[in-house]
Length: 271
Image (tube, rainbow, N blue to C red):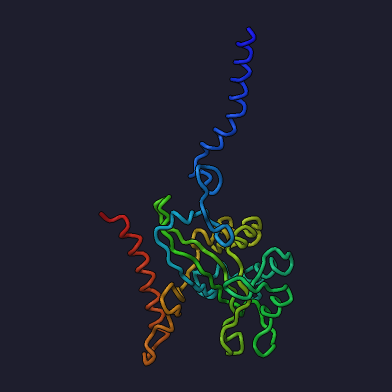
């Protein structure tokens, strides 16, 4: 009887102590790729809003894009009226200055954090010290990686950061000026919880979207400014110096690169 009781207690201890270990070992890595499982996976948890494991990136190229908010397709982001107070530029400004909810940097390596005062000065003053209006900040640049994720067998646009830019015309024709860089993950997490800041559907306001939804569904038109290359050069810098219309040629080269990305994605599924 005593031996039976000891065996029962021992069996009970094995079940109780072994259950958490068994549960930990059998959690699917496809569900929690950076959590439990038989090994850990590296992934970008600083800039990216997506959970893409580094080991699953079979192809990757960096792409730098520009959204011109004045274009008809992008007016939903530009905002309403002359002040554009409900547009994306002013919404980002309020998130930084009024709520101190977004961290801003002065360089794309994110080594130079900006104070709110420095950000305000960059935002409101041009090269000659003159004040500007929000509507004069109509460029929104961003950097993303074009990635083939083998885990999901899918091509993904993985946005890394947003770059606020003052156009040269606004900056007293002294060249474009960097206002600040913001991590896309911070942008995504902030605006998904602030539904009052919206991509505006002027045809049906009930279908307006939050900025995180608009960016993830690619509801904007952008032009490629640069892509990963050995010279680290802009597309405009690769145009021949003596070309009669370098701006048009740069635009055509950007479109050609877009078509190459589409062709690459389509060719993945050809037999």
